[in-house]
Image (tube, rainbow, N blue to C red):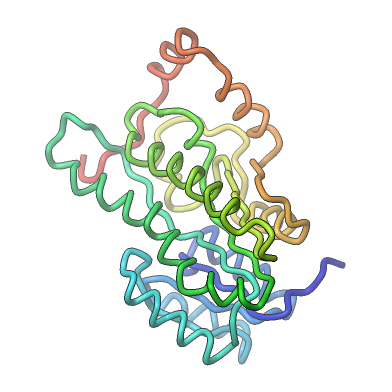
Length: 258
């Protein structure tokens, strides 16, 4: 049986998809979970399934002040979390040539990159002082190479991977573990709109169980499922002359309103 955290688990983007599946995974073990997302009603419905175990916190990860307020409320209810899972993320097709997509680029970076910072920042100093804690960032295999039609998403996940690596090294020796998770395709509302084949698709429940196992093992970097790990390694080393024509033929994610 995996070691039980000393305190609560905070999950951002917990209102649906992978975030909700992660919340079910931990609450199902009897571990207190702080549920954070923008949609308060969805969080309340989830919390009702685990009376007295889950707290709900309506906040936007793009808002640093709101995230600090949420962290204070979580500490008052549960104490300092043992694990913070920064799962909130957005994905939308983008084209640089479209002036109207500038706002989409900004939203994606604010959520997928700064959202990680805002999720972790209120907890880092206290975790360091305590001498233990786990910070988990949900990145993506899309961060390994530039994906046409998804420049904002791909670049934001590349930034997330490098940010998490920087944080991991900064906290080396502090007792605080930083874990980078790079999933492939997960069956959620985010992927439901994709008009192309998505190999090795996982359910959110399967992905959550795998991620919980990675966290239990304190593995600092993981790609899942294993088939996508193989593809990610190949993508990483594939020369430009081979990658470019292959990627150019890939399907494109729909643009917002496009």
